[in-house]
Length: 244
Length: 226
Image (cartoon, rainbow over all chains, first blue to last red; front, side, top):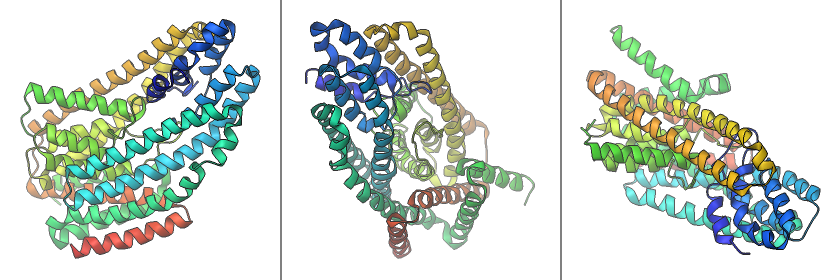
């Protein structure tokens, strides 16, 4: 796979042109460019078609985009009909989005962030933050390398390659890990902040937290956590200004 | 707020820009997580402790966000940099509330500017639709670099204006001790509510919820025993 490393680096910026029309489309085209270079000399007409296809609408989790990229590039070299490649791209959007979001945004990120919060609260300082960055980026970059290789090796059979890979199994395991980690982090962080304020301060802050949680359940997205926080702060300032 | 020299201010704007780019465009290396952005910003502003305190608190807010698909969310990265800069140099118990308040406003603004960038990206693509349809590699590269440049400009603007706002707040907003502490407690309470709400929503009703409850029980024990 010539241009593999360049494509891999370009995949880091796959959302660089994110928009509501083509979503990752142009970013995928940009990442595909070095992989399609060899096709230019062999079959220039096919190369042009492949470049056009590579920039069409596409959306998935950016960390698994390499699977789709590798598979479609392989299909272009194997002269699979264009309509079939388009269908493959469309078919990959949802599973790669769902698996990647569950694995990274809902799983790995909160799991590692929760541990980093606990580490900071227990006095690890810089090390907790550095560990978060190193572990996350090792997993993320390793996944990107695996995804591009697996996609390219599997070509049009990428669906079954994903199904039998480690990804679905990891998704099942990482969710509970994230739950435990975030669950651990919230009271530890609260304790870290509230230790210096005495019982009255702690009770006050926890009362605000309880009201916030209840209001969040009641109003849903109409009153987001940020709006509630700004509203609560504004009310406090108003009460203090009024001398209460 | 520590009085920042031009060099420190420039470094904070540069860090804020990098962090803004990291959220969506490149490299998505988790630099934009508040816990990371705040710690580094605190170090740059000469007060690591303040940076960590602001970073962890805004991280609790960020745990309420699941950045999937085309969902709209606040941009906590540059906001945390601004919050850490404002909190630096004073006891965190007195500045955390005000810093968090300003950071949340910047975060909302940041989320709005992200939508603007996405719309501008779409317009740029429409302008080059013919070149894309002809398979011109140069057009793809120009669009990509243009998108990155727009997001970088967003980061520079957000960080610079945020830093100016922080300087203004430090200069003109004077709170008595009780109000400052009250704001900090409200900020802590609302952050805990945000994180808890997000955690319960993400947990659903399966194994993840059970592990969340188990983790919370252990965390509560640790918090009480420490």
